[in-house]
Structure formats: structure tokens, C-alpha cells
Amino acid sequence: MTADLLAPFDLTGRVALVTGGTGGIGRACVERLAAYGATVALTCVEGVEDPAAVRDGFGNLAPAVHPLDLRRAESIRRCMADVADRHGRIDVLVNNAAVGSATVAAFSGDPDTQDSLMLAINADGTLKMCQQFLALAGEPGRKLINISSVGGGVTAFPGFRLSDGMSKAAVAFLTRQLAAEAVHAEVDVFAICPGATNTPMFQASTLSKMSRKDLTAFLSRLPKGRLIEPSEIAALVHFLASPPSRVLHGAVLDASMGLGVRPGLMSEHKIH
Image (cartoon, rainbow, N blue to C red; front, side, top):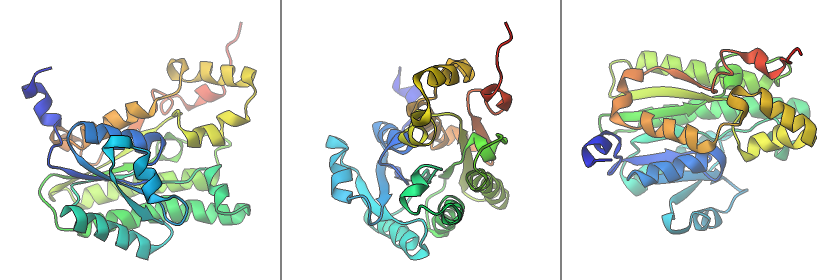
């Protein structure tokens, strides 16, 4: 591919922050953006993950790693300020960090507390990250990319945990509202709503609970008969971080490979 064709997607000189970049979609985003020239910083869970160990886990890439606790406004302000101070600015923010039905259990075993944490981390934490990013001075063409979910962000699935779906719906609404308010500003705002993606979080919440037979049946019912790979979502993030994405300002993208338009697929059975 020629340099002219790659030029619109070259991120050299851009500074990107990916929250929750230690694994799954977040890690794939870190690697993809860095591969196209961006200076990438990521966050780890404050008080839980060791920044040095996380950085070492990326080998020669060695991105800057900043502790972040999305439950605490002070931690959010400190993280954003540290990244901006270290790199001079933040051009791209990817709000990927979140908890799911399984991972929230690491914070509390009480279901009521888990529901509150789900909303505090996924919805309120993302809100505050967006507010801090928009308050920073920056160059034209900044990009704000929120990661929501097909469940809540696009459609409803019976049996989907209410607090989980509510938090993802809040992120989708937040994206549209911020985009409406920034329609004349030099920042573009988007959300991506992945479907069933091959991540440790989805493995813990859903796949690990299935027998081999049930897992085979589940995968066969998914769109295209497979899970989405984190690298596929990272490719969308890369496009949204690039100048050609401007025309999609305000878009909440259904990245579920068709599950969003056919949610019943999860429970449909073939009639022989």
C-alpha cells in the first residue's frame, strides 16, 4: 500500500489515551494506534494493577501507564492531568475501561453494591473522563471515542443484567448529547457498540459458564458463527481516530456483526 493511501490514517504526532488498555479491546487499541504512529498512554486499575508490570507486558512498545480509579473524581482528574503534563496534550481519548457482570464481583460480592458500582464506573466514570478531556486545551481535530455495547447501547437482550445494560445505554446517550453540543467545536465524538467479543471479560461473564456442547451451540448462533476479535474493534477505533472519520461525528456505531439488528439470534433455534 502506498504512502499516499496510508496518509489519512497515519497518527504520527498524535497523543492517544486508552483507558483499560491492559487487555482485550483496550490492549488491541493500544497496539493498533501505536503501530500507526501515535504516542499511546493507557490506564491500569489504581491500587490493583502494577503500572510497571503492565508496561513491561507490552515489551518494546513500553507505553506510559497511568493508574486510574473511575469511581473517584480525584483519580480521574489526576490521571488526565498526568497524561497531559507528560505528553503536552491529549488528541484522542478512548474510553474503554469498564466492568461487566463477572469483573464487578472483584469489587464486591453484594449484588446491590455491584449494581451501584456498575453505574458508577461505566457511566459516571465515563462522563467525568469526557468532561475532563473536553476541558483540556488541544489542537483541532481531537477525537473522543466511547466504547459502549450492543446490549444497552443499541438494543435489549432478555436476561441481560439491568445495571450493565443501563450503564452502556448511558454511554450511548452521553455520546449523542456531547456530539450535539460539540457540533461546531474542533472535536469529534463517537461511540462503538461491540457485540460478543473474544475478551477475558466476556470469557469470565459468559463463555466460562458453558459446557462444551452449549458453547458450540452458542457460537454457531452468533452472527457469522463466531466471536468478534478485539483487533476488529481496534481497527474501528483507529479509523475514528483518523481525520476521515469527521463525517461520522455523533455516530453510535453498531459493531456487533448483525446482532444489534437481530437480537433474537441469541435464542433462535433452527427447525428441522
